[in-house]
Image (cartoon, rainbow, N blue to C red; front, side, top):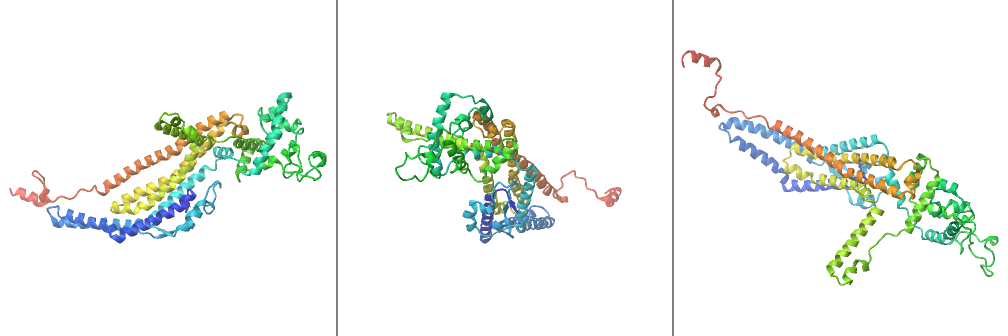
Length: 512
């Protein structure tokens, strides 16, 4: 049986373990048998309400037999745990292969060892299988969207994790980029052809094609030895050491960036990206007609930009400024709260977009809701007196909540195609920095629309299903209890016409 999220594997088993626990408590204390006693009491009460006890008792006994049979069928099919269910029997299969298997997720390390085998009633096992099958088939019909928004967001949060690489980037910017850019601004050479190919902002990039191709990086070299680069006397000279050859050399900036006799700083930065990201980026490179080198430059620009931008934070002096100015502790506390909320909102929207957070949380909430339904089903069965109407209601609820995954897949498909339509066919419009304001506007528009759909579409769907289910169950209930009881002759009022048949006609002729 498939699930819609890796976490659902463990919450499902846990929910059914709690179902067994609550069911055992109800049966052990005798509370589970109260509905049968109520059925018998109601039958006895109805038998003594009519004037003809004998006819009424026959009907009441028949009604009680039917009610008890239906209640027993609910207990056997929907109440008694029967089919064994464990985490190994539940699989999460991502149709696009983007999410790791359940055993490779952190949920497995935490939950799996604490969960044992659960047992599920036959009816609910079939309900889960049916809901998962319908949802999985519907999702497979959509296909695998490219997921532009998630790729861009993953692209944007790349950082340098190796301190030695970060140190080399700082050195290269100070010892190579700043001097080369200063010379370029003084000389203002004619490089329109290069700027037309690589963008007007190319000189603002430490791997600038202008600086590499026009000899700017060939004029400068590292101020101090760089780890990994061998010492070359013809390049480094003998004036920088006294008798002992240094361990490392001082490469020219073009060598330092592109590599050769030593490690390439450009490649070292690229190796800081998260595993698997480049596969998705390469797909966009091939789809939008850009070169792999252009995409690599955009990734390096993003990583460097992320390293240079430090997130805002509230410090004690700012938070307590009103209090220190003698304006009261109340205003100081209000200022601290305002600063904290504003800072949190800035970081939340800049470093963790709200709609993307909703999208990530939705399947987790779905898993918790299903778990809650599973574990509370025994109470529903008892409180509904083992009514099939209650079973059908819970069945519709489980299938509907499972179907939310399909609705979210539709939203992701819409999100992907909307972003592609708004950003255009250029790779720079997706990963570039020159049109950052345009991207932000488009991203906010798409995130607002799709974020509302992530919440609104399942809500509307659930309301429609609940309305339809309510009316169907209402009609079913009216049909079950709509037969009018047969009235006895003694209960008929004056003016009632009796059909006496042939004997009545004979009596009428005799004047009786």
